Image 1: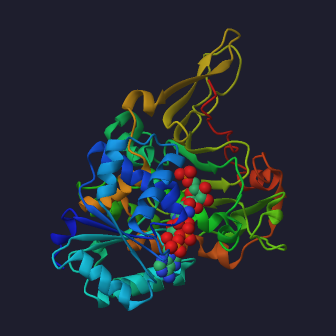
Image 2: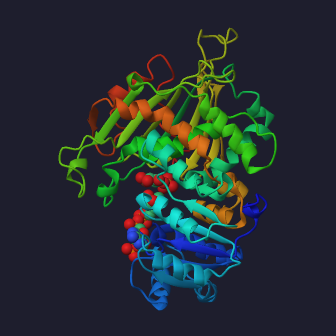
Length: 468
Ligand SMILES: NC(=O)C1=CN([C@@H]2O[C@H](COP(=O)(O)OP(=O)(O)OC[C@H]3O[C@@H](n4cnc5c(N)ncnc54)[C@H](OP(=O)(O)O)[C@@H]3O)[C@@H](O)[C@H]2O)C=CC1
Ligand SMILES: O=C1O[C@H](COP(=O)(O)O)[C@@H](O)[C@H](O)[C@H]1O
């Protein structure tokens, strides 16, 4: 397919897996919201195994959208429902593709969105190719992309045998989060930040993704996966790449992805000696979890970026379920200022910090210090809330599905960055240390996690929205 075709807006979304859990919780709502905003300009062909009528699918869509907390406007929903059609069948069966090809017609410009079990990504794309439905089309695949480096490489090889890289969109919903997208602009458009953003000013970077709920009803999915594969290999490494990359040289999707790919390439493979795994008390009772499971629900690790900007700056990542708070943030600890000889008491001020909160209530905090009345120092924080100052953003799935439909690949992970991020974490998969138990509602196995950062800034309690 000529590369210009890959960027043309699609006129059809083929939604494989429209009856599934992700569709119910998130993607039907996202499509409805795009309709409401006037940003949806295609028909939608749902594909799944359920033997439903179109009326049943429409009813299911309405209930799902309402259950997701969205107020359903009848006029908007009617417009949305008119776009829908439905094909039921088994995606491993050729007959389904013959029906799909007929429904699509010869001139369709389709996006095939695969919110399907990952084991079916390869078979579906191959069948689409065999039935000549990939010319002029794009394919968007859900996470996870592989379960280790070898399987990610195999999947890339399999999909790339029938698709050009420009046709393949690998979803990572963190790349659709407004504050994550904002990082590029904040870093490079503000000299006040840009001038501090390197090893001369930054002494350590901490990225925390804490969730205050457990695995709940997702035991069967989660137990073979664990925190490292579920959120570190993808979400947190993509965030790290955006936080530490060099400035892109142009506005194209590959200008940005060249820089994130390059950055991940310069991250050394993780060392299991600098890796802490935890499992919350009660995890083994979750339905679907093996009774003797040693899957981690908490992962903390240290990484090094071996390039001119970041050499020598330790990067600490941690992610956990059933933690004290739900908060995802990036925290840059700046180096200490020299001794403040002009103060009456001999002391050093606390290190400044720059904090980007990704969730909830995204914002930027500058943590400074000021002089108190006794000649010591007190914390002084400058906070901004993006919602208040920048307005309500598109939700991640709205942004990603819209990007897929209009042909903007910028928000999707490219082959190189997916493989590099698996390369980085692979040693932790191959030689996983034992898991340490931690209490629900805590900050994880803190004794072990504290050892990981010994000699550097301690883990900082994340900036939570209720904190003033
Ligand atoms: N659920 C979530 O919260 C999230 C999920 N994801 C990813 O999204 C993808 C889908 O997950 P999820 O929605 O939870 O999965 P589900 O199992 O809930 O849904 C899978 C969908 O695939 C369809 N399907 C499965 N096998 C076949 C088949 N042989 N032929 C036709 N249709 C088939 C199902 O149809 P039917 O229902 O008719 O059987 C259903 O529509 C996965 O890659 C997952 O990792 C990513 C982020 C979050
Ligand atoms: O991909 C995943 O992300 C969610 C967290 O997403 P968020 O947008 O709510 O922060 C995580 O709970 C889940 O385990 C994981 O699969």
